[in-house]
Length: 369
Length: 262
Image (cartoon, rainbow over all chains, first blue to last red; front, side):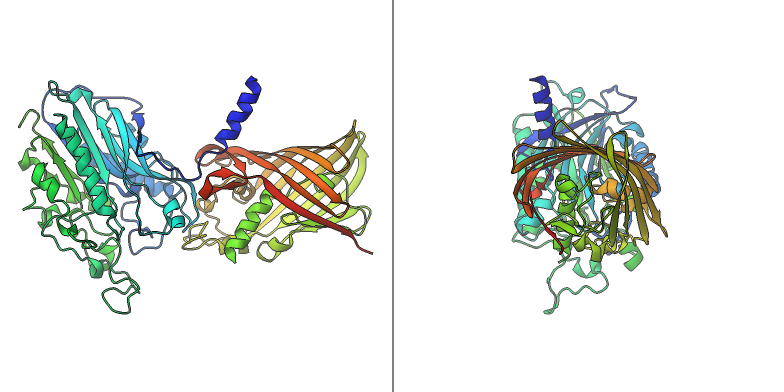
């Protein structure tokens, strides 16, 4: 009987999904650093950073999000990039790090588990991870095996980590959607930072970049709903991520500055009038999509300042070589239902070579109302 | 067309090692008899001591040829040697492309490559069960810069192409087949591939097939193939054939035909 069960188990394991789909709510994967340090919280303020690290490929001309046509970076360069990202995180010295586009087992980045790498090479001790793209093999552009997603790293223990599924794009055919990204919100509790009876949460999000339907609205709505639940429970949160949305008052059309050689936009002959991911008025209200966040919560960078050059966080990776642009829009945000020490909020533009997004950090005034 | 060819080739990796009708035993086809299947190579009994085979569909995108030669009996086993040569470069460059069915990243240009394989096969009937033992050496030569990032990290494929990245490897296996009735037979096999030094250095393949012989000239097979092994990303296993979009295993079905040339 035992043998039969073993054989059955082997056969069932052999039938693991080729592409992993997720329930609306599922557990995140938990991580710990090989050796921990500096775990004690001294009741001081809490520093938070958000960073889309572009799976450690820095400004590599990746085919999917720039004017490049490369797919797989060499292992040595990835190691070098990851070491530089780890150094930057150590220099920022945040208590909580919200990461997007982290690879944990992907062909394109030599199967390095980047969550574990960063835990083992920074002063952060605990992590949790939620896949947004997990497949045995993507049969397109040589992508192959992939597992990429959001991660929260922290000096303090994380518990109750949840992966909250975001709606899939509806502007794709069934086959493309099957092999495409499944974006999510990653939420975790940090018991060490509990304030009296109020729990403390970190919430990480990466909203859709390329949808031309209302998927982005759905993602932001779900994000707002998730934060409202924490707020209504009387608990604290720090949150942030790559919202792939520009602040109110921003330019909304980057099609021409993002255009690659041979592309054609804004003409009658163009196959698509706007470039996917470069246009921020795909549906009514998209330019003001972040208003509900700005209105209810404290933003690390005030909305009045969000479009200032010193707070821009993103530029396509090949824009520097093509148009001498390092960053030209803000897509990355931090919010809290507490209070930021606003004078300490910073967009780390010196790190522009390490990703096509820049880290944004802020310091939470713990106990401030 | 490329999609069809690729699917066909993947399927033929699953189906391509059936033993019934003695494809991978030490027994040769009778002289002038040919056999072929949907996914099985075309085999031909050239003489009483030599049999050759080619995969006709592969041939135009991945030229290949195999020759089996009978040898003197050894320890009571019927023995044969088998030699294979394959040139995979045209096919690999076909699938190193942008967009859908870009299995290898377009960054890579695959150099001319040549695969050679030599095997020793020994077969014996014991109490109505046909047993075949086999083993051999694989060599892979790349005549140019073969980037190690260009591997296809999929079951069945990774270790077959791994020999070009590792330059050499071993294979060994065991086939057992028995006729349950006049019309129905069963085949169970296990094959081990070793690529010492490669990141992902072994694979173990096992299959079970039931075959129904309509006549001497036609049969249908069904069953499964199970693959486990070590890959650059770690250990993995899969039951094949597998339909990704439905996330389910389905039984393989193979049709095979044979005739004797007059």
